[in-house]
Image 1 (cartoon, one colour):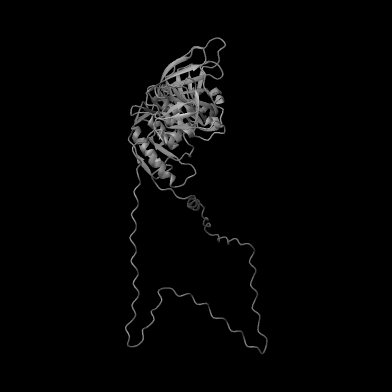
Image 2: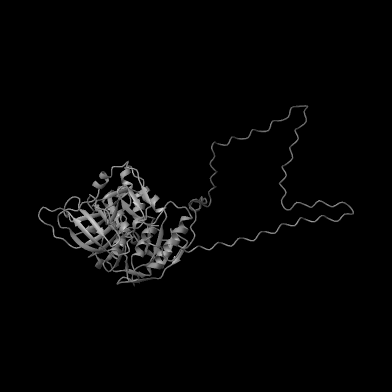
Length: 481
C-alpha cells in the first residue's frame, strides 16, 4: 500500500541538491522528486488533504520526521507544522522552495492518450526489464502503441503482453509510437492496493512524451526515456512453429529452481546455473549430480519421436523462477529441436499462456547433458587419458629407457701391486626386513606385556538434510515499512 510514509522514504535519500530532500504539499497531494540511475528524475505523489493551503508549500523531510516523533496528526502551515491542538514544529528558512516548486510537473494543454492498464500485467512484464546503467532504452517498460503490446526486456529475456495498450495510427510527420516508462517509476506504483492504473500520455510521436499513471492511492509523473527500443519481434517466434511443448506445475518448478540454486552456490562455481532436463523431469544444480524431480508431460506432434536425452536447457536460476511465477499450469513451455546449426539445448526457451509470452536465452555450459552421476575432477581425467607405452613386437629387444645423457662404461678393476694384499670385497647390501617387528621377550618371572588397546572411533556425524525454501516468495513487499 502506498501512503505518506512512502513519499517520506523517497525524500529521505541522499541528494546533492538540498531542496530535493523535501515534500511539497499543494492542498490535495504530497509530492516528492525521485532520482534513479537509469533515467531522469520523476515525481511521485499520494493523496494528502490540507484544506488551509491555498498555494504549494515545501517542507524539509527532517522537519516532517521530527513532527511525527511528537504527534501523529499533521497539518501544514506557512513556515511550520502543527497537530491542530497548539503543538508546532518549525523549520529553518535556509532553502528557497520557489526553485523546488518550479520542478513540479505541469500538464500540457493538449489532449492525452488515455487508457487503463492492469497492474498485474505491468508486474509480469516489469520483472524482465533492464536494471543496469548500460542497458539504456532497455531500462524502460515499452508501451508499443503501434501493435498494442506491453514489453519488458533486458537483453537475456523478454516478457510481453498482447492487447494491453491501445493501438494508435501514425499521423503525417509523427515519429515513433513507442513510449518508454522508467522502470523505477513503474515499480513504485506496483505497491498500490488497486488492480488498475489510469495512464495518460502527452506528446505522442515526439522525442520525449510525458506519462502520468494514477491509482486511488498514488500517482507518478515522468518523462519517457529517450532512445530506440530494439526490434523485439525478431527473437519472438510464431506460435505455430512449435511442434513440441511441455506442461508442468510452475510452483513446483520455481521451488525446485530456488533449492538447486542455493545448493549449487555452495560449490562456489564460476557461474551459478540450473539445468532443466525436460526428458527426465528433473531440475539439476549446474551439471549435477544433485537434482529435484518435477512432473513434466511432453505434448505435441513430435512428442513420440523426439530423443528425450537431448531435451535440456542450462538457464540462469532467477530468470527461470521469474517466468514460472508469471504463468499457471495451463502454460505451454515450447521446445525447439536441433536444426543442424544449433542443438536443442542452444535454442531459446519460449513460454506461452493466453496473451502472455516470454523468451529466455539459455546459458552456454557445453554440450554435456546434466547427470546424477558424480563427475571426476579434471586432473584425474587427464591422467586416465594418458597413453601407455606399447609392447615391442616379437623377436625384437625392448628399447632402452631414454636418459639425459649416455651411460659411460665402468672402468676395469685395477690389479693390486706386488706385496699388497688384495682388497676385501664389501658385503652385499642386506634386503630390508619386512613383516611385523618381533616382540621383545619379557624378563624372567614376569608376565608378557599387553599391547595397548586402540581408542574407539567416534561415530560419523549424519549428513544434514537440505533445507527446502518456502513455497513462494512475496513479489510485492510493502515499501512503507
